[in-house]
Picture 1 (cartoon, rainbow, N blue to C red):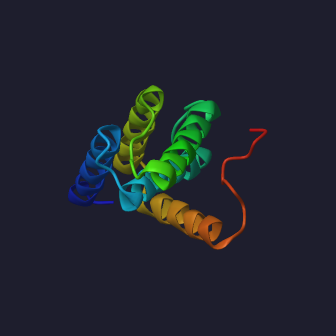
Picture 2 (picture 1 turned 90 degrees about the vertical axis):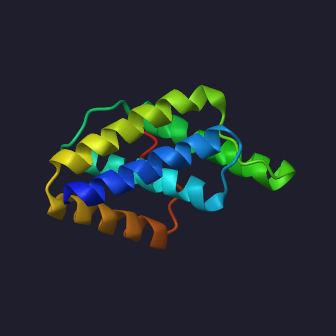
Picture 3 (picture 1 turned 135 degrees about the vertical axis):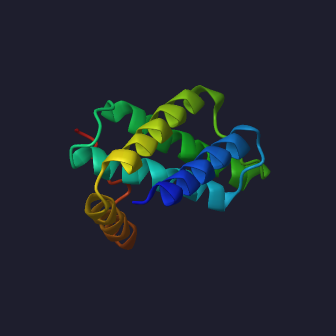
Length: 128
């Protein structure tokens, strides 16, 4: 991935996190954050990163809580206690985009597409 594209993606992810942290998020921004988390997961499984699985799960749970709150009261705010986990995973994804070859990033995107087309609740195994 060229540097300009990686920088653009990184900026978009970090701005989405800021918006969702302050209660100014929306469904699109939450989806973009989870896209980055899941792509980071797939790239880590390909050998690019070593973040504990639990951090990935925490972000999933935080998104579920945010979606429930948004449905109930209309506020798109990530739980404060999960922000640090999102920051760690976005930093991982930034590093992955800077170091992983393009074919690995594309393979991760294909895995994300397959997950989204399927019926699994999460690409992160419960027993990993």
